[in-house]
Length: 126
Image 1: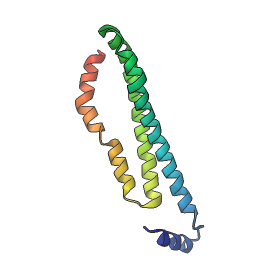
Image 2: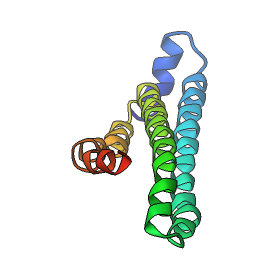
Image 3: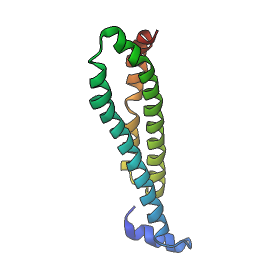
Image 4: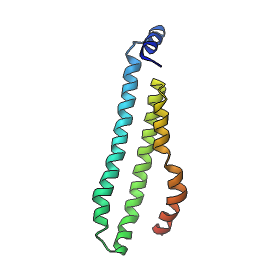
């Protein structure tokens, strides 16, 4: 929906023309902040945690990996869900087709993770 049509539709329903734009910007900012948190966490894990973990022997690596994996699992899942919700909110406030596409891309790795990676990680965790 282009800007002029949004402005005219907001005038006809009695809302301020910039209210919907402000809500859309808030949704965009929230979604972007969540994506940045997810990205920052991934960089930290790959550069700091994993590099330090690889300095250990195999038994110590596995002992360190088990609790770290589950903490990371909770963090990544919650950030992906929050990012998906913010993307959905941004879509509903703008009706821009790119937001649901971003949500699909954000959540697209879940089937691969659940069916391919998680069985191996469960075996390692026992």
